[in-house]
Structures are given as C-alpha cells and as structure tokens.
Length: 271
Image 1: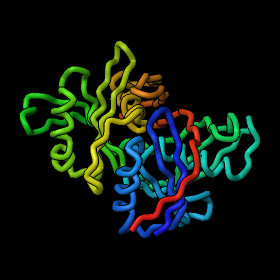
Image 2: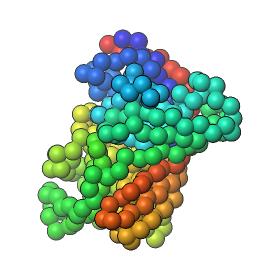
Image 3: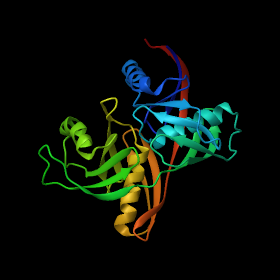
Image 4: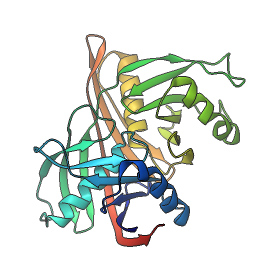
C-alpha cells in the first residue's frame, strides 16, 4: 500500500501522522515498518474519520495508547492545512485513542510549520504505588495510570538504562497495560528522561520528550502536595510544560503545553 504521512517534531519526540487510510489490524505493522525505515521516528499515529461529529478528526495511535505529543502533532497538521493565520488563537476537539472523552487542543500557528498549543489531557484513572518483579521487589514507584498508558515515576539513578530497557516489557505485562512509560525524574534539576514501551508493536524507545509522562509528573506532584502543581521539564531533546490541580482526593484538571514543528510530508510504499 502507498502511505502518505507527515513528520512532526514536538520537543524532539519525533512523530509520524499517517494521512492514508490504514485498517486497524494493519496499523501496528505499518507503524513498525515506518519506524524501521526512519530510526528518528519514535511513534506513529493514524488519522481517521471521527465518530463524534463535533471532533475535527480521530487520532488512532499505533498501539491504541493515548499520546499528548502526537495529539499536538495532529493538531499542527490540521490547523496548518486549514490555513490558520499566524498568531490567531484556535481550539478544536479531537478524538484520540486511549482518551474516553474528546480532547480539547488550543493554540496558534507561530508560522506556517510551527504550532504552539495546549492539550487538555485525560485525567488519571489512579495514582498509586507499585512494585515489580525481575529483581526490583524491594522498590516501590509512584504509578500514574491513564487510559491506554501507565507511567512509573522513577528517581534518577535507581535503574541503569540497559536494565530498564531489558525489564520494561515484563513490567508492562505485570500491569496489564497497553503501554508503559518509565519516567526518570530529577525533581531538583527539573529533568525527565522517558523510556516508553508499546505492547502491540513490542517497541521500547528512549524518547526525546514525553507529554503524557510530563503530565503524569505534574499529576503526581499535585497529589503529593494536595493542591496545584506546575512543571517545566528539560527532557533529552526539548522542554515540555504541564500543570495539574488536585482537590477532594483527585486530580481535577491536567494540561500539557508544547510546540510541534512540521518537518515535511512524505510517501512510502509498504507491502
């Protein structure tokens, strides 16, 4: 099949948004092939017709997970093609895999290829402590569970990089999750290093940045402090901001803001 797609850079978390129709049962295979051909690509999403007529489009991620940076990337593509004037504020609803409700994305085009916006993130299903097997039985980590993806917040230095990549698939299975992020967080230095595993494609990637992981940190800190929390985290290839409000024993709001830069439109023949 001939695949048309756009390549976008949201804070170094290189994302491909596929325009061509690809049946759901073939999306994991197509995503894996695109990532194999371009090793800079960290994740792939597919544009589909939304079920909700109020939504601009549906974004279906390669593993059915939710992804904030990919959502922002899809918005960049949609707003750019609509010819949104530079600096003009706009907001739209998007259907996104892993999100139980339409996701509001707002912002403006900085120029014809750069969108700066905010994503109203799905709220966590739970925030708890978790422990894993594989030699880490004595450790507990904060776990923020979203629809479609879980994030374990790991203090920097707790696990070596090679060991983390070796155990993340097993840990994802232990949680029964579609996807798992290990977010290596340094609160003092305001840094985050994300490792994300997607079960359906069996891929573990050290990402340039992770929007939902950043949001998970904000949600965790808001719960920890029992109020509002805001973070601006330096990640391997960019900076991502998130904020959360917490009251009456739950996260009430959660947003992520970032820039997404369109790198170009491409085609690929995949057999």
